[in-house]
Length: 99
Image (cartoon, rainbow, N blue to C red; front, side):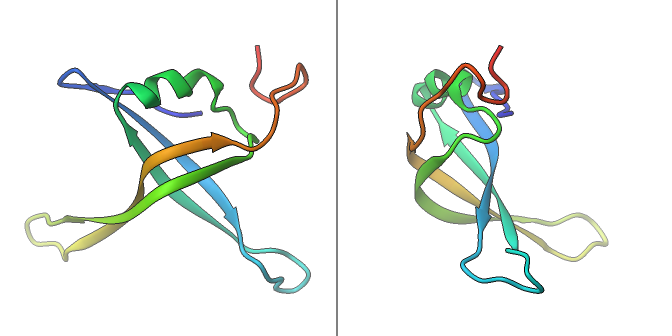
């Protein structure tokens, strides 16, 4: 689920967090998908346990990366810079992604 590239000896855990809104539209709950980045050894230790469908609490701040390319408009990419991640469920034998 999460990507753990190693950039100049610094581990970076990147994953996408699905967040349900607190209202319904035509009987369905809209979902937002937020890119999350956790830098350092903490992310490296969490990566094996972070599987699709796990219920997590993410604490951090929203950052916006600006990217500019020649002859193209400026593009903004929001993401959450995670300081702390807590698992709110218990991992079971039947959990998706467990092997």
